[in-house]
Image: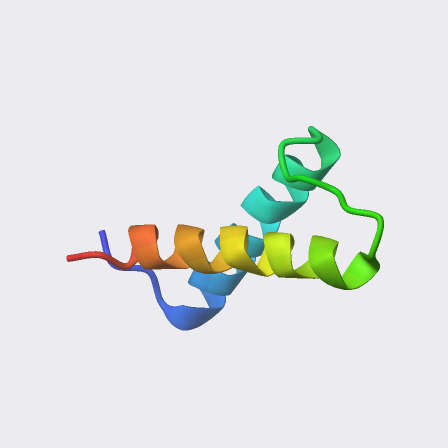
Amino acid sequence: MKLNYPDLVSLARSVTELEIQGNLIAKYEKAEDTAKEIATFYNAFVDEVTKE
């Protein structure tokens, strides 16, 4: 199934938020490092979902 861009962004955001709420994404002392970890997860999720 191929998702359109708005649906993909919405799905990736929701999954990322659930990961954060479930403490499944590492948190660091520096907010910048935590943001990088979140971005890495988000991008990996999008890459996996959009694989053909």
